[in-house]
Length: 305
Ligand code: HEM
Image (cartoon, rainbow, N blue to C red; front, top):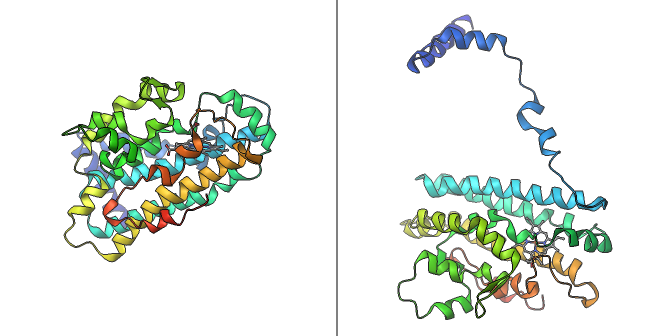
């Protein structure tokens, strides 16, 4: 044991010498420093101080916290996606990361019942009025995930493709002009955007376009299509991700919107002001990350929703 420690000490000394530093300073520092605690490392106090409610309705805190949980989960997804896009990983690591991406997405789907049930209908519909024009739509993480997953042209719905058919060699900017999510509040004839959309675009659109340009050729879709002989396991995981993210999550989300905004056929206006029933429906958007693997029957089965 003592010999092991001597060897370790030598390696530590070498590490700091290689950095041009005096190892004794660092060893002294180690001797003096306090042990790290869970609360220092994980920062629960900081996390739990981030809920700034705008009303006294009890469920508003849960509403904020669940959105924050979602941001942490999508943050984990983005962390995995960045590695898949930027590092030249072997198939075994693609399998691990796609398995994780599916697990994170299932966490989002399975936990959405926290939103769908339990909040008082009238309380929710009262406190949400203090939130306009904010909308979950303004969560940029969802847009990052899409950019890493697929080419910009796959983020154009049928109406967008119709509008773009005259454009010969569309640029990323062209795709962003016609991207599906602008349907949330863009009257193209009048050139008018809803406040929710305009504020989102002012904050993020330039960065989203730069990011889409930077990942061109490296998205999950493009890298997968370049693989000479991807395994069935990886192919199935990619298909599963597409379905979970582009059909199953949108459905639990849409059902939640129906639960709070359309109880008894009331069809209340959303905080973001979209034609939400249409906008949120996966059949309308037909968003697909990996069109060559897509199983259309998943959407065909959605009759009646
Ligand atoms: C009671 C709960 C919720 C309701 C009633 C609801 C309702 C809506 C509505 C109506 C829209 C359409 C845009 C608008 O006009 O505002 C929307 C968009 C969106 N919401 Fe929610 N939402 C809820 C919870 C959440 C949560 C917890 C998240 C997670 C961050 C979220 C993320 C999103 C996203 C990403 C969009 C854009 C979807 C897309 O572009 O495909 N929502 N939501």
